[in-house]
Each structure stands twice: as structure tokens, then as C-alpha cells.
Image 1 (cartoon, rainbow, N blue to C red):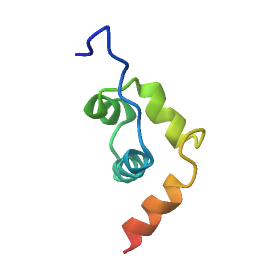
Image 2: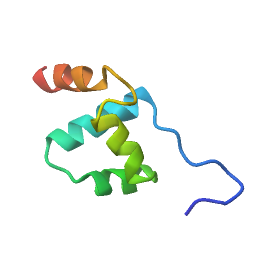
Image 3: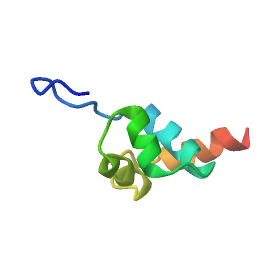
Length: 65
């Protein structure tokens, strides 16, 4: 649970790479969001490449290695 006086968690580029890896493995966006304690819309922004551009490419590189 979030404390109303504190801002919610802000996803980092590294988080975005992890989100891509989990999504590519078939995990649902809402489950990923719950794990990071963020609104599912924040995960969707990453998957639509509106936030943390380049994270998909980095995830694909890591996955291929």
C-alpha cells in the first residue's frame, strides 16, 4: 500500500527492461504492474514505447545473449 503522503514509485530504464522481458515471456501487464506497485498504465506506457525508449531493444539483446 502507498502512503498518501509519498509519491508512487517511478519506473527506471532498468525496470523497463525487466518489464519487457517479463512481457515477452507472456506475463500479463496487470501482474507486472502489481509487482512494481505501479498503475498498469505505467507499464503500458513502456510497452507502447512512450516511456523509456530503447528498453525493448535492450531487453531483446539480453534475451538473445
